[in-house]
Structure formats: structure tokens, C-alpha cells
Image 1 (spheres, rainbow, N blue to C red):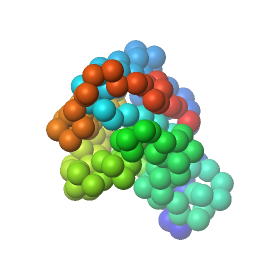
Image 2 (image 1 turned 90 degrees about the vertical axis):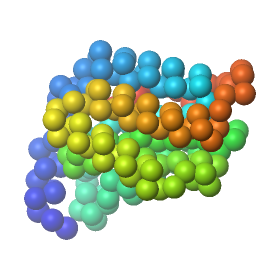
Image 3 (image 1 turned 60 degrees about the vertical axis):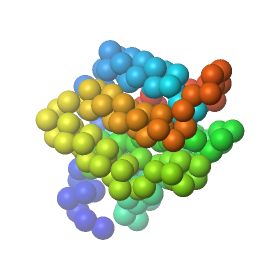
Image 4 (image 1 turned 45 degrees about the vertical axis):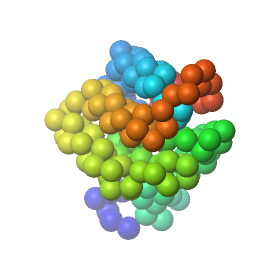
Length: 165
């Protein structure tokens, strides 16, 4: 348990999330997801969380572990063809994680997701939060189009609206 991390989490607030992800940037992210899903058979969710609190924080839960928890809680795994993708941002750590369902993981190497996460984290370091996420959605889209092209009439199985925790 690192004191610096605990302090960052204690002082990262919802107000900071709202400052970095105002209504227009959340709308742009939602639009990017909607547009993306017309081109492939996958489902994308975006979640931003200000900080961990309580027991998970003091037990040292990583952004990756939290993303996996949310992947389950939001039922991103529950798509017909196992093609759900979660893009998760833990703002206090400025950490991005991509969790993909087993159908996608069979075709896309985890290093590809890591590259996208790093590109998004670089954008966030330059205070480009909304555009960083939109770029991340576009990069995920490229992989989904390649491996899971639209077969026409893809149903929208998961909400496109970003989740702010």
C-alpha cells in the first residue's frame, strides 16, 4: 500500500471528472461508440471513475482488477457473440485498461490493447481527455472491424452512453 496513491485517490473528486469530461465530451464519446458499432459486431462501453475508495483502495486494487470487476458488473461479457469491450479510466491513477471478452481475446493480442491504452494515457497527460477517449474508441474499432465486421442488422446489446462513477 503506497501512501502517495492513497492520497491521490482521496483527493481526486467527481468535480475533476466533470471538469475533464463535460457534457459535450461525454456526448462526443457516446457518438463515437454509436458510430463505431455500425461498422462491426462488437459492443463498446466506456467507464470513467474518479478514484477507488475504502477497502479496495487500502488493499491495493489495481486499475486492471477494477476494470475486470466492472466488466462483470456492467455485463459487458453478456453479448451474443462474446464481443464486448470495456474501456476503463481510473482518473486518480490516470490509468486506462481495456478488457475484452473471450471472443475478441482469441483474435486480438493483449499488446494491441496496451498500445491503445498508452496512446490514451499520453493524450490525458496533455489534458486531452474527451478526444483521447474518442481516439481510443476509434483504435478499438479498427480491431473490431478487422475481426468482427458488421453482418448487417447488428443489434445494440449494450448502452452506448459513457458511465461516470
